Length: 291
Image (cartoon, rainbow, N blue to C red; front, top):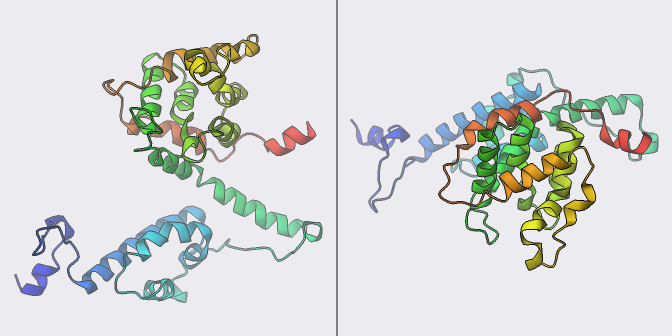
C-alpha cells in the first residue's frame, strides 16, 4: 500500500497519529470528499421526506440545523456557500419544491393563497415532531438535576416499570416523556410537556402530565414546602386513578440505579406511533377558543 493510500484508508481501520490518538481523516481532500458524501446523503434523505429539493432543504430552517454540524467539520470548505456549491448544482434539483414563503407584512393583509402555503409548511414541520421528541430524549442523558440517576435513566426506567406492569401503550409513552421538558425548564416542565404532547394523546394523559407534580408531592412535599395532599382536588376526575398509578407505581420508584431498565430502542416505536401520525387531533387552539 502506498503512503497516500495508507493515509486515506477507510475510517473503520482506526489509524492512529504520532501522538497515539485516533486520526481517521489525515488527508484533507479525503476528509472533504467523505464529509461531502455524508452531507449529500443527509440532505437527500431529508429532502425526500419533506418533498423539497436539496438546495431548498439546505436553505430552510430544517436544513440549516441538520447540516450545520457537518459543514463545521469540512476542513476543505471555507464557507457554507462553498460547501453547497461543492455538490449541489441547479441541475441537481430533482424534487418538486414546496419551499414557498409568503410576502405579506400584516396578518390582516394575508390571503387564502398565503394560508395554503403556510398550512403546507406546517404539515411538513409536523413530520419532524418524532425527531424533536427523540432529540429531547437524548438531551436528557447526563442531566441529573441533583438526582442520582440522570433524567434519561429515570424516564426509561419509569417506562420499563409501566411496560412490565402491562400498562397501556399510552401510559408507557407518558412515562417516557413526562420529564422531558426539564431540559427546557424544571420549574415549568409539567406544563410544557403537557402542551407539547396534547395533540397526540388523550385528554386524560394531558391532564395527568400537567398535574403530575401535585401527585408526586405526596412523597416529598413536606421537604419543599408543598402540600402533600395536592392530588385530593382531582378525586372524581376520570384520569385520577391513572395519575395515582403513574405517580405511585412508576414515576416515584424510577430512581434505582440497579434496576434492570429496558434500552431506549424498546420504546422508540411508541414515539413513532404517537408522534408520527399525519393526522393528530383537531386544532386545539381553535377547539379551546371557539368550543
